[in-house]
Image (cartoon, rainbow, N blue to C red):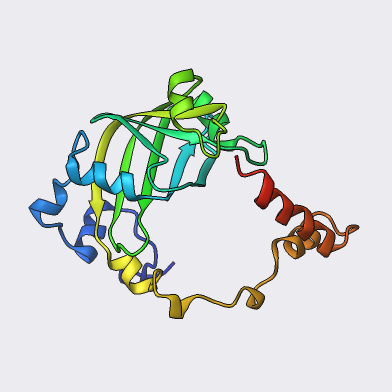
Length: 210
């Protein structure tokens, strides 16, 4: 057994704090119970989010959502709604919410290093008026995820600054990585031509977004 000072795993909160230190008071207490004008405006400008769920069996999932800025509707200072657009029909996020309503969301705005994070309790809804207000190209979603907010706060921009996510000079050439069709071919459809898979994907991206 290694000596205590040689341990590589930390499982004690006090030991962790000894390494990372204590947060400043204004950081430790930055969570808010509701949206303010800055949170609202950030959501209005955001074209992309990641939503995290956990099912009854403990399975964790994080799923992307994207649309033109303003696609997430702020219903009031404690409630937002996210449209559920056509996808692959696995419905992992929705299925998890049927079992466990706890949810977390992270919003990004291109060009802004800070992100907005919130957590709360979600439900899947079929409110006709709400869905109609979420229509794009004349097509309304069939469902929406309505979230009652418990906590919301801004996260500093160090991660995005370090990653240079918004710097076009860091973006790879698309040909430097496998196409989605090639990935699908290698992982689960080896009997089909990658070019044919890519053609179907391209058609879906063009015609089936809404």
